[in-house]
Length: 131
Image 1 (cartoon, one colour):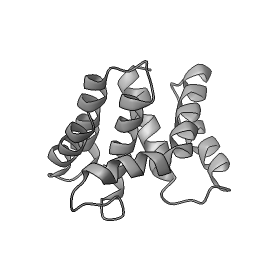
Image 2 (tube, one colour):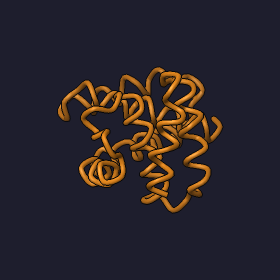
Image 3 (cartoon, helix red, strand yellow):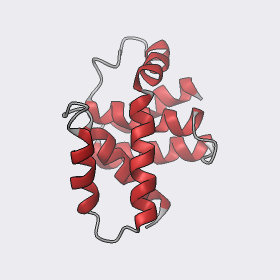
Image 4 (cartoon, helix red, strand yellow):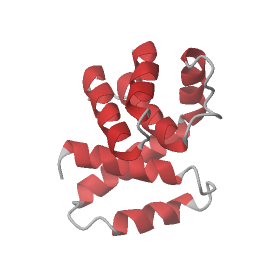
């Protein structure tokens, strides 16, 4: 599985956090990971570890996003855009393995694929302020 595919699956699983409570998430993780046919066990572990770590830092991440998102608190953002921004922020500021520019570029690509027509520019604008 390519790095972009792994990131996309992290995004999808992180997005699930918006719709399930914390007690349901281990089962949701298992169900999601079981659907990934061409995914090695190490990729499954990596995806779940990253999602769990990001979910554990959501308050901190959202605080930083809210500092720069003038007129758009995290409560008002689309769940898709917010999840993409959270993932990119984590990659930019908390994951030393991923260069910041790569995190931003990949976030914009996810926004193009899963967001609205305005999502790529919105995501890029927020991330530029966080960079």
